[in-house]
Image 1 (cartoon, helix red, strand yellow):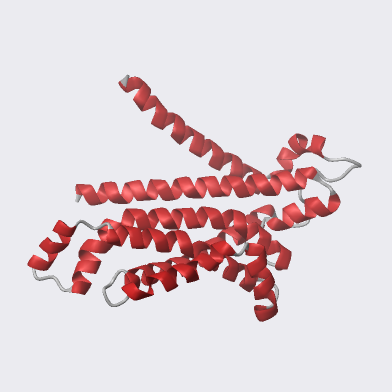
Image 2: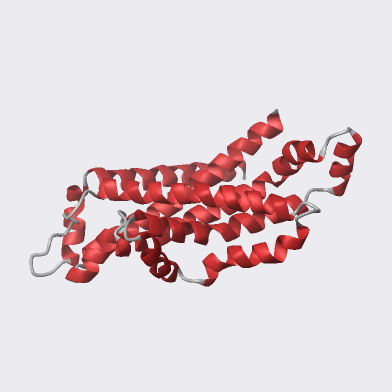
Length: 253
């Protein structure tokens, strides 16, 4: 069975590269895919979205997602560290309530609240994605830090490490797999959610979907949905690969 075990990773790698190649081919030369989408149009409607550059829209959406994810990560990890310290443990219920707000209210509701405060465009979308991305990162940070083995913590204290040294050299490295998993989940959720930002003027693939809905063009809707879905899958897979590579290197070191 070793041959079968070897073929599986190779097949997965080929599938990844195939999906990436297909996505890049469509974003760079969308008109070459016109024959595939033409049966989905009617009354001579264009089969490929022609009201903007698809590659620019995809990159704009990805940039928005990454910017919001960085902000969510900084806040959620910092908050997770604070509430797992003895002096901050009492604020854990309050912190959980705050980070749950983003998941309690739908992104559309957050956008509706944010637009009167900050106006149309990119900013309300960033606020919605920031709020939506806090929960998985925060909960995974808390779980990771709380899951550090007591024996390891005692050994670190016995070596004379201060609380900050234990956090940086022992707790965070041990919790990092769970923290990265939370970031990965947050990113994937945000890629799909970011599409709704187009309803308030943010650049993204939501423009393609909205154009399809307004013109009853199924081809546009499918293009926006497929590109968004492929981006989410590839980003999730890339993050998982990065995690494996990082921890493989750490074990070797």
